[in-house]
Image 1: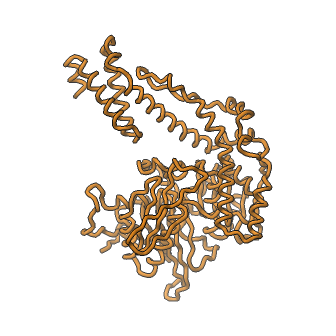
Image 2: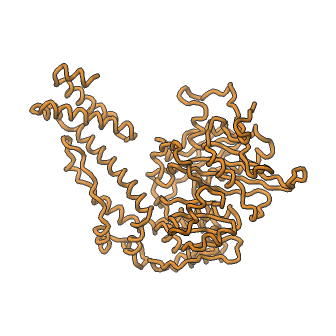
Length: 553
């Protein structure tokens, strides 16, 4: 059934001939690829070290660099001493020059921070190490890895914890079966609650939507189903345990929010990749719903292809968050400005000379410590922290959003006969001048140098990423408003006294609008599109026959 190809490290498994798509428009593996890029098995080879044993489905291509990165990142460092089963996740850069996959239309309704990162892949690892005298090295060491472009951290961690033990017990057929199960899953559309069958069980989770109210968790609506067993409901697609990651460094958590918000270089040192990957993910979640726009590596090793780039001492550390376990990094990264030591390390704490811009909020710290003393459930502690940082981030972002709105041209200035107006440039000094009357103090009681924090934020990739995203959204909105203006205008009357060149220009502009609407998947009602096409027909027929022929060809 399977054949070894290439260098002998990758086994290609053919898709059974009897497999047929469930719909004429859905090809095999289409639905699978909406969720997962591929599944890998990484083993330890005495001659080669970590080696790729299997990639499934067989048609999926990974470059040699991607395979090497996945292999090294799928095993804990040898010093970790991880016996038994260990779970963690990593994030790697796609190889340069490789075709990047555009964001699919499926993701258009996702919150910004859940959209796929173009050029990056996530790996969700389930590693098993057990003593085995029958193996020359004395240990069985193998990992099952799910590779995806989507940061669905909670779901994929749960999924690999179901798939991997089955694989270790039953071998390759169980991995094939799991992938075929995933290929039957419905599309992950924003706002939908999906039921995901896997090995006879059903995971149920809600896909967040960009229209969700941020402070109100949308409950999962379960639908009665005759199918057994009852679904296992995941409370979140992507949220992880913030409280446990930062329990030993709680007094510094507000400072960590500032460091992440402003894109400062951060390294998390711990003994296990389970600890580092959870902590790095918890760090970037502190500024949600704002997307963290710098690079971050939940687990990073000396074998990573970006090792030299990120550890060089010839220039300032880059804006990146690294999770490391190898003691070698303690020396290599000692010049980094902010170091977090957590987990089982003897010297836990945050090592930095950073001075906070905002006054420390002792209230949240007291509330969490009181909860620890009262043995408040971890879920409740997480909910308190998540809400606190969500409100803090919103207090910071609302003035920016309000100022962004003021850069929009007035709707009455949008003419169907002219190109759509542009957004005014973002002027940082003009924005800062608005803080006194409409700054964060309107929604937050925290005192401090908010202006200084904004100035630091303006120099970070997070500001650049936020601004580009909002600029794209606003420009798309202006295109829609301009298209609506064209729909509602009496174009047949307007062209009466116009030269042919002006009429042709209008025709080309309308065609461009229709193409833009289709290519960018813009939500425009069918009536508007029909109206615009009708305008187009009327205008074209007003022209001489020879010109009509040219335009219709």
